[in-house]
Amino acid sequence: MDGQSKISEDGCVEVAPELIVEIAASIPSIDLHQKLKTYQNNQFQKSLIRRLYDI
Image 1: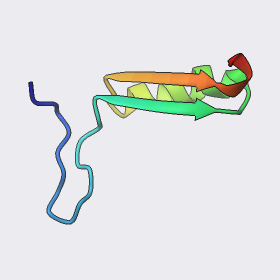
Image 2 (image 1 turned 45 degrees about the vertical axis):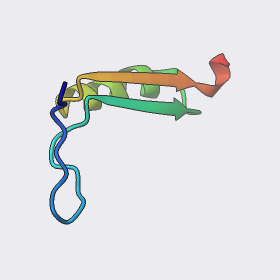
Image 3 (image 1 turned 30 degrees about the vertical axis):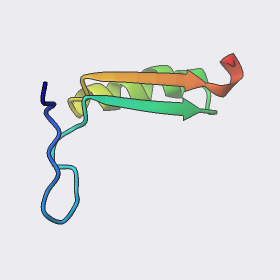
């Protein structure tokens, strides 16, 4: 199955990837609210944020 991501001739991603994974060390309100909203606004289909303090 093909994803929605496309790479341009100059090597840039032209469409949001299907999945973004982030390992974060910032405070929960940033990781779980501000960043999530940013990802949703930029049409990421799925995101996984794993906080270092939860490990």
